[in-house]
Length: 218
Image 1 (cartoon, rainbow, N blue to C red):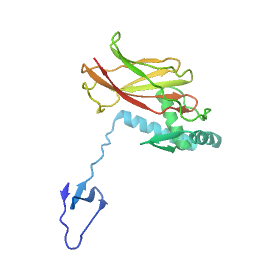
Image 2 (image 1 turned 60 degrees about the vertical axis):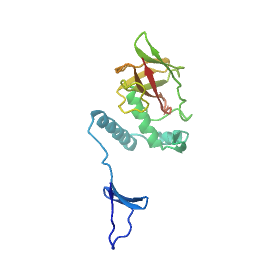
Image 3 (image 1 turned 90 degrees about the horizontal axis):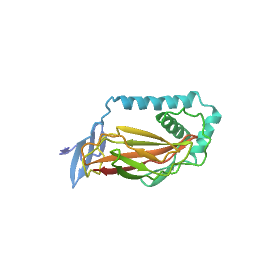
Image 4 (image 1 turned 30 degrees about the vertical axis):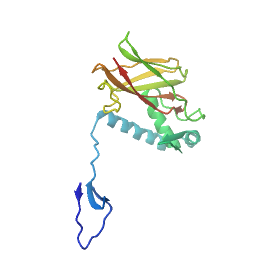
């Protein structure tokens, strides 16, 4: 950041030019350099981008007009919420997201949805330390056959941490007729904290909102 002393030619400036943003603070003109976003080549990131690209290609070249109409109709009932505001998603958005999740859980993607009930219900999970196996266990009401719940969790973080600064390194996939998961993780340091992220996929064309929490372990 730099304080700018304007000449007689330029008396004021705001907005951005390339990597520099001009503004003012407490009456002083300020020039700030924009942070360069990190976009490292990480195998997981490349793999996921390729899957998104492949899903878009399938939408454009392989799905029939009737397939697309059904995804559009399903998406009209499939509201998203961000920052407390609801908005609708497109049929393409729903197809790409569902196809990617189906691949995540090892299921063959579907050409069109047969579910038109909107978003799948959230799965509330009760988390507790399971000393018998030395893992955090989640217990919930099984959503039933035709559903799969995916759990993503970190390895252990420092005790008392409430902000996640590490990636979700671990994934557990639980079939819908089951209602329990023991989270696989490196439980170090001990005591410590695991951050957990999960959602449920309805195999016929829908999925739930995501849930996030953190759980401390001994």
